[in-house]
Length: 276
Ligand SMILES: NC(=O)c1ccc[n+]([C@@H]2O[C@H](COP(=O)([O-])OP(=O)(O)OC[C@H]3O[C@@H](n4cnc5c(N)ncnc54)[C@H](OP(=O)(O)O)[C@@H]3O)[C@@H](O)[C@H]2O)c1
Image (cartoon, rainbow, N blue to C red; front, side, top):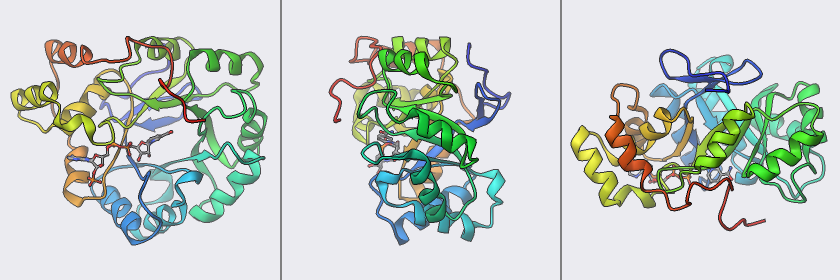
C-alpha cells in the first residue's frame, strides 16, 4: 500500500503524517444531541471502540464529549473526528467552537465535510486550524479524484484522509487507487449503506457461509481492502456486533463476490449525485 499501512493487529492505519487512525469507528450522524447519543458513544467505548466520528453539521458534539468524559477512558486513547461545515466562513474559528462543545483541547482529525465553494475554498483555514493545534491531522470528505488533484495543486499541507461513501455496492475502485497513490487514506462512510445493504441476498449468502452477520461481513470487507470504516448504530447489541470483525477473515473468493456488487463502475468520483 502506498499510504503507510495497517498495524499488525489490523486495528489502525498509519496515516501519511505518522498518526494512527483506528480502523473501526462509531458514527453518530442522525443521532440527536442528548441521552441517545451519549449512551451510544458510552457503549461503543465500553466495547472497545477507540474512534468516534461526528461533525459540526450533526449537532451532537456536546454529547460525544459528555460520553467521553463519563466513560473514564483517557482522552489520548480515543480518536475523535469532527468536520467543518462548509457553509460557514472560517474553519479555524469553527474548530475552536467544536473543541468547546466537545470539551477537549484538540481533535484528532478535522475534515472539510464536502467541497462546497470548490475544493480549495476551506483549505487555508484548515491549515490554520492545524497550525493552531486545534487538530492533529486534517483531511477532506466527499472529494473525488479531480477535487483531490485541484486541492493538492495549492495545498501547503496535504490532506491525510478522504472520507467517502464506500461499500461493496459503492466500490469506488479508481478513487481508492488514486488515494493510495496520493498517500491519502480513503475512509468508508455508510459502509452498511445506511442499513440498506444489510438485506442484500449476496451479502447474506456470504454471511451465512462464514457464520457471521451481514454487518460484520460488510465491515470486514472494508478492513480487508485496507479501508477504515465508520458504522452507525444506537443499539447496544448492534454496536457490540459491529465491533467483532477482527477475529475472522473473508477468503479471496468471498472478497471477489462482494467486489462484484459494485454499482459505480469503479468510479473515481466520491458521489454520483452531489448534494452541494
Ligand atoms: N462525511 C460524510 O459526508 C458522511 C455521510 C454519511 C455518513 N457519514 C459517517 O458515517 C457513519 C455511518 O454511516 P451511516 O450513518 O450512513 O450508516 P451505516 O453505518 O452504513 O448504517 C447504519 C444503519 O444500519 C443500522 N445498523 C447498524 N448496525 C447494524 C447491525 N449490526 N444490524 C442491523 N442493522 C444495523 C443502523 O440502525 P440502528 O442504529 O438502529 O442499529 C442504521 O440504520 C455516519 O454515522 C457518519 O459518522 C459521513
